Length: 276
Image (tube, rainbow, N blue to C red):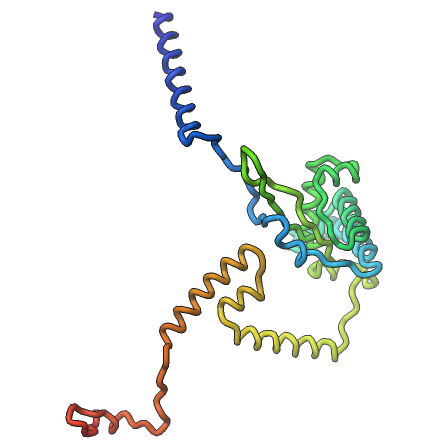
C-alpha cells in the first residue's frame, strides 16, 4: 500500500513539473517576470535637472545646525509631553522621531550636496559605509528625516538589457530642506529672517500674475508647464483631447445681439415675424 502511494505521488509530481515547464516555455523564449518597482518611482534621467538645486554658500552648514537643534528640541518636547500627560501632535511627533543616527545620515547628505553642487543620489550601501550604520538604521533615518521635512526623496528605476527583468530599482534622489512646520521649535537664530513688506507684496503680485496666466492656458499647455516627465506627457495628451472636444462643441458659435427680442423675432414659414 505504501509503495502504491509513493508511486502515485511521484507521478503527480512529474505531471506538475511538466505543466510548469510548459507554461514557462510556452512563448518559446525566456519568461520575463519583471522586477518590482517601488510606488512613486520615475525613470532615471527624467527629473534630475528639475529636482536638484545648487545650495547657497553656507546653506548646508545651516541645515545641519538646524537638524542638530531639532534633535534636542524633540527630546525636550517628548519630555514635556510625558510630564504633562498629553499626546504629541503631528509636528511634535515628527520632531520627536529624529534620532542621532538620522542627524548623522543628514550630515552625510549635506556633505554630498556641498561637494557635488546639490546633486545627491547615494545608495543605501554608501550611506551605511560613510556613517558606520546598518542598512536598516539608514532606512529608518531617511524615513524620519522625510517625515520631519528635512529631506525630499524621489525613487528611481532604470531599464535593463538582456534576459530577466526589464526594470530595476536604482538609487534615490535626495534634497535637503529646512522644514517650515518645525521652525517654531528651533532657536530664533536658526529661523530665516522674515521678508520685507515690499518683497511680500511683490511675491503676492507675482503669484496673482502667474494664476492669471495659467487661467488663459489650455489643458494641454497647463499640463506641460506644471508637470514634467512621463506623467506630464500623459496628462498633456489627455488635455489635448479635452481641448479638441471643447473646440468641436463650439465651432463657429453665433452670439445673440443685445437688441435681440425673443418675443418678436421668431420667423414663421411665411417669412413674417411672430411672437412666441
